[in-house]
Image (cartoon, rainbow, N blue to C red):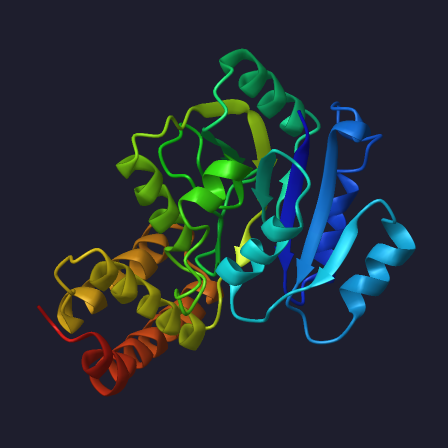
Length: 280
């Protein structure tokens, strides 16, 4: 059994270095001969390539297609030599037993058309509404910062859909296609990555990412959400942390960014998305 660990990156060299440091053969409990690491790089410039050449010579670097994370992950998968594809994000910090836990689960199942998901742990409490972290402690989410798919199955179902315009929903879409085929997706609790809180993206970027949600709905012949419902959902996700976390200067900044995100979401919906996706 051989793993190909695929890490898409884009202008986050400091975080990438922390991720790769925890995947070194002397850090992982799985033997180094049982896996390879592929970094597929959408960055502007050659900083990641230089970093890898200097500090992580065991890692294979390749330029990415610069068409978003779905295309970037697929780019790495096409270069993979392993029978199993491990997808991680560059801002995650893998546990020492990550690959061993996946190895043991696959070895015991003997199912060669399978997908798995691991745990995503936030190692600290989030006190500011300006920061967040994905958390998956019980499974059922299949978020792309910690999943495994057999290579044959991955290409059989069509890889990640590269038509998702922004980094949002492309892993949910892959999960849906796997479930349609009644593919087994066990949750491997011991296959952990740690995801420290990260600064929330700019209001404009967060608003733009909502287009991927609309594309997902249209692709799956689901009713296109109205602008009003989209704004309500946006408000819910931004205002709940402001309400529940300690009130300070960050709370005011978060409120300002929420209002900006509401504006950008409304603007894109009215002048771009309504024409492109329509409303059913």
